[in-house]
Image (cartoon, rainbow, N blue to C red):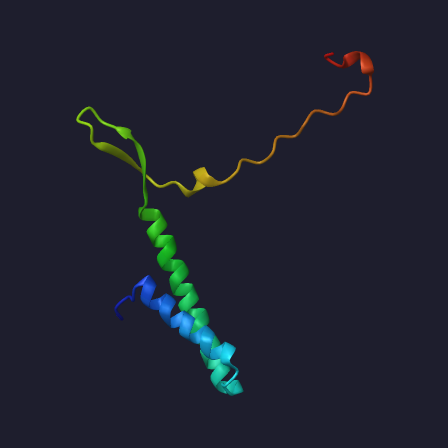
Length: 98
């Protein structure tokens, strides 16, 4: 099994691929190969970021000894709740609260 490279290493390699593609000096076959390598690197970066976010702990307070307490990161807690539907607007002006 190949050794996993670091996020930083993958990012540097991805930046090199982007620069090579942006230079315009590559032939079509070389540009396609560079693009494919960049897509693989981007996927690896996303995987590494996803794995890191799962390891993040949220500070939840302090225990009796003054030590920070942590809870596992919950990505769903950062999503916005769906908007609640509003009641239909009243057509009768007598129903208004003012």
